[in-house]
Image (cartoon, rainbow, N blue to C red):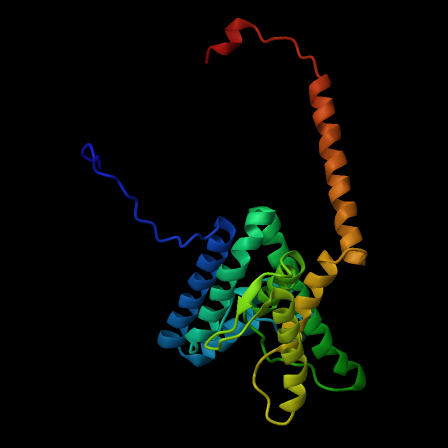
Length: 261
């Protein structure tokens, strides 16, 4: 719609400075969440639980059951009776993930998101299946949620923006991003020890796993850091050779009659 001369034209936008990779992840996660809600409401809790046994992260389903897709799919599933669960995860993804995507770009950010999320899931499976070596029954309790990847994003922000100030919700406290992430790591480590008898239905191992994978991947001198750079160098050399081969090609020009369809 045009505007009359002398009157400014404004475009209403609802993206809230969201980056495309973060937008895609939030859209996919909420789409899966609303599908869960529909199954929960109209089909019942048992069909929904069977869905989680297939697409949640079930330790006994990944290693003995060979459901190798679960370390990927569990990131998009959340508790259908707890909207704050998915809302908080997506809010943290929007708040901290968009800055990483602005620095890295969409493709690299999404790769890092799945790297930390899948890595956290594999650590969770490893910790839960180790007791099988001592004769204990495998765990069939599904783990769901994007928190492993979110904690990986926290670790990346602490490494890339260590002095960025962060405010604590509802408290007049501000601290650096590095201190904020160290505080989260401490809480994730000590809270399970304090609540060992009661439990809180939170996978602290998955949270710490995502943070650990992100730290090892980005910290200079670590194995994952060196492996990442080696892979990047190999990709760069491969693309460079392809470009050189393409530039050396001297194909004869096509005949004019070949231009006609």
